[in-house]
Amino acid sequence: MSPYRVGIIGCGRPWKSEGATGFGMSHWHAEGYKASPDAEIVALADISLENARAFQARHGGDALYADYREMLAQEQLDIVSICTWPHLHAEMAMAAAEAGVKAIHSEKPMAPTYGEARRMVDICESHGVQLTFNHQRRFGPQFRKARELLRSGAIGQLQRLEGICPNLCDWGTHWFDMLFFYNDETPVDWLIGQIDVRDGKSFFGLIHEGQGLSYFHFQNDVFGLMITGHGVEGTVGNKLMGSEGTIEVRTNREMPLRIWSKGSSDWQPVEVDTGRSDLTWVEDGVLDLIDALKSGREPELAGRRALRATELIFATYESSRRRGRVDLPLTIEDSPLLDMLASSKNKA
Image (tube, rainbow, N blue to C red; front, top):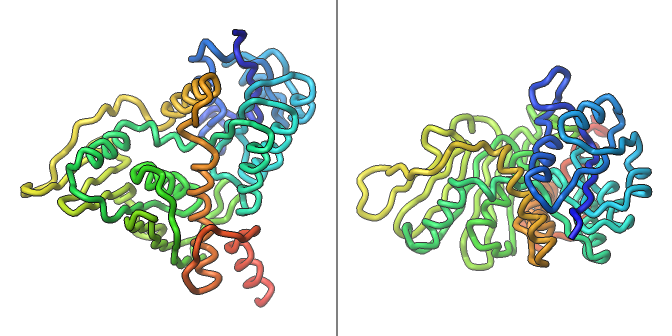
């Protein structure tokens, strides 16, 4: 079989290089494709051809385009990576699906509105296109070991899952996704939440809340809690709380995983491999999506899984707008956060 033809939209600048405003995620996508014998980067699209040329010199790719639509029309691509800001994801994914690609791998968060996020998934499914999003922490050893401990009964019956991070959408999309990961992808049936926009920041063109609180119920009677904003420094991570103990997962390398189980008098560290960072896990996600495309199985980073995490983000915003509980599935099209900000501005 010939290698899958890969095109990358949004080359950007390498992480921490001069003029870089992000993590250079396209470069980490490229490392994954280069590690696979079943993929070949053949085309690059970026509104800055200077960025595209620099990317080409480092990762390859014969053809350069300033217009991604022209690349889709000319290159007969099998896989497309979308590494642009969130407000561009939906239109690019839908254009790629309609161009006949076999798979799309996009950066997160999915989109600025829930309607756009849902349409991305629906259109890819209707065209038979495999859609994935870069929730790379599913490949982190501390997260996988935490789920392994949970499944082994180390903390008894799972009762509650918690996530703590700076915001609901840019970082929280990872944590909502991880709570589904621990709980075997069990759906959520209701959520109640509140947000406050004071001191909210903008990341990659999206405005975020200053503080947020989200409490929700999985269909297997496990409860979830997400806390964002002020005072989370040093506590960013996940907790898995069971009838006989607690597992704590952190983002620091000193103690990424620890457990307090029945019979213990204190926290016990759990050894995991910390030799690779969360950015190198991006490569694992790319290799997984290629394998899934070959075998026909569901990829670990499947679009439907990402949509469930995204639904909880927008359901939290919607609960704050309604001032009440939100029952799922969510049926809104907009972003309640953006709507509330616009309404507040109009009243000022």
